[in-house]
Image (cartoon, rainbow, N blue to C red; front, top):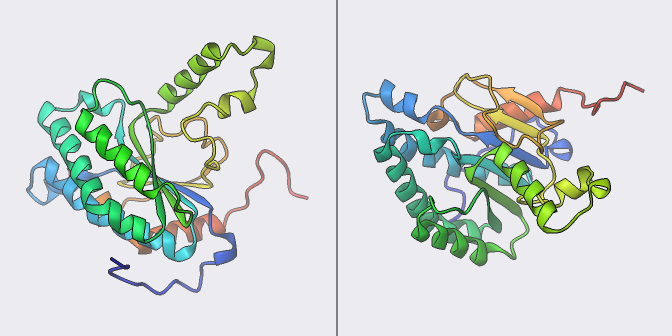
Length: 246
């Protein structure tokens, strides 16, 4: 399936300086549903259309990696019915979309813990999607699932111990090499929807110098036009990485 809704790229965007890696906290599904008089779970379903549209938008402007926060290590605290729905929803989402994304040259990867809480059927679908798309190079869609930024750093440090790395040899490079996906560049731009001004334990190591854009748009209403607006905001900024202007 090709892009269901081709959209002209705004003239304001400079394709030569589009962020290589964009990360998104997809927030506001529950509030969107409540405002519609629907169950919270209906908001998650509505968010699928936003995810698909934003993915196609990212492809259109040449983004190389898109990381989306699908389920956090803290989300297990939500009501059991909502957690169960999210497990089933994410499994069915992969089943419905993996071949479409494969046809578009998208590599699907996952960041997060593969622990006992994640149903085996969901892990199986994750593995199938990764295997199907592993040779694709147009863009990486990295799904943060059962993910926490602190958990990722803890897991990296534990791997250092298992690898027998001496304390004197532990540096940023050694830790980064043991993150979930060290081959992915740090995100240039991190977007959070729904008007919240938090990073919520997302990519704590990786976003050290990311540009942050917050929008009031609830995730189910977020589309590629909103993505383009965030990229335009990113391009208006000057990134110095702790240095000074020349």
